[in-house]
Image 1 (cartoon, helix red, strand yellow):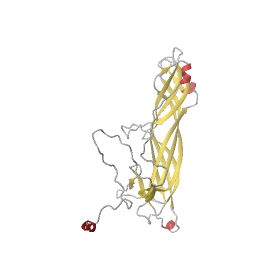
Image 2 (cartoon, rainbow, N blue to C red):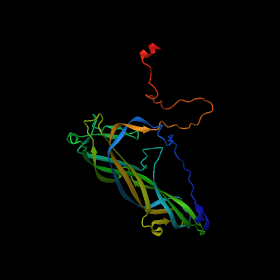
Image 3 (spheres, rainbow, N blue to C red):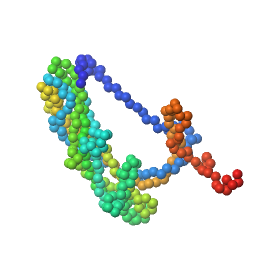
Image 4 (cartoon, one colour):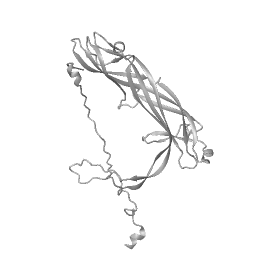
Length: 313
């Protein structure tokens, strides 16, 4: 909290320290270093994108810090919201969590002996994809994919952090600025906020492949807060003795979810070579090991000599 003269309020500035990433990839603009490389990766066969939204009304949410006795808020300059996340505990019930759960018809998820869906590693490095199966023979004969239908329930629980930038007058009628911070619960884990929608996806053949197709789903969420009635008089209550602040809010939850049918594939891609990063060299060592092996191909010679070649030398 900081008090300033009225003229100083017109010259408020916010500085940020930001950075840019370094990938180690360089391209000189010519094609002389471009070569074909083979990579084993995951291909998206079909995908569906959904935008969902929900509203949460918050009444008399406490905000900190207290503004002091006799304080009066005269202007709200900004109000913003961000997801709460505790990096020390990923299972913290206060972490804002978006959990999609889908059921499908016309196909089924492959299960193990314990009747649990078989999950495989996705691009996030976690077991986030389910193997899907259905009889695709009829559509295989037509050279087309087989449609499957499903319903999705998105459950939201946890907290968000709302920050409100205000200008207020203290008991000496001096103008001050402050940032009020409130921890707002959207829903408890035992009673999450639920949204439902339906989808259709197309899956490739399960017979003309060495790998069954996989089903992946993931969501992201942002929040947009506002005063409940857009009125400082009605929505913000400042205790005249202690200066504690309570606010009425409406928090809009904006969710994007995507469903994907993924198949493992091998691709030939054009590459300009391996990334080369400039390392911070220690003053003692004179050489350092490489992190990735050099590609040995026809342009650079064979991997090793045959036994007959060694005998003739």
